[in-house]
Image (tube, rainbow, N blue to C red; front, side):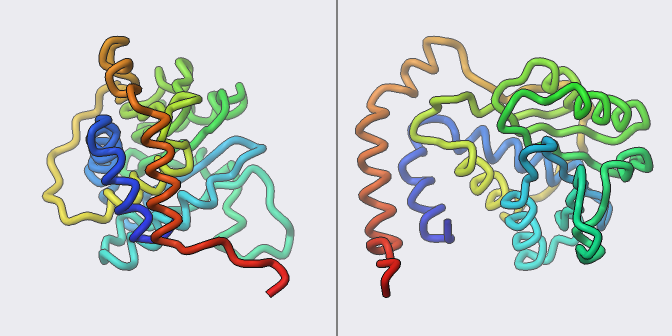
Length: 221
């Protein structure tokens, strides 16, 4: 998803409240990430957050915000991987109070991940979570953004694009407050209002993204 597609998605999501929630989470990420190389990012053993890592690395470089440059934490890696791609899960044992751990988990966090996150929090690291509304992971996070299954027209992948793009926007950081806060669903009535016209939004999104990116390439070309 390129910058034009992100802009198109923002136009379609403007009435839903998701732009405010993703931007709020992105600003929390900026507020807490104050040390170069101090932003750690981890996923589940089955789903490493490659896209989020790449997006944040791009935003860090383009916006000249070294604090946003992420360190990908991996559960396993091939022996020949370059140094920046072989930072193991044991890195969390060395987390400090000056560092931030971003957990990106599109499934319920397994026990081994929750244990590692809890250990990092006890050491003093700040925990942020982008997930599906996992209550156990949310209880460990100082800031969390839940993107439940079936949240139309916003997908979990699109939420990562919006958060990373907003993290690189010009912004005057505020003094971070270390509490436990989940920017998840609004009350049921609000969710119902936001969900009205979802099918229409999906249709408009597909048309707009097609117009921006052009027709799919022919594999035979």
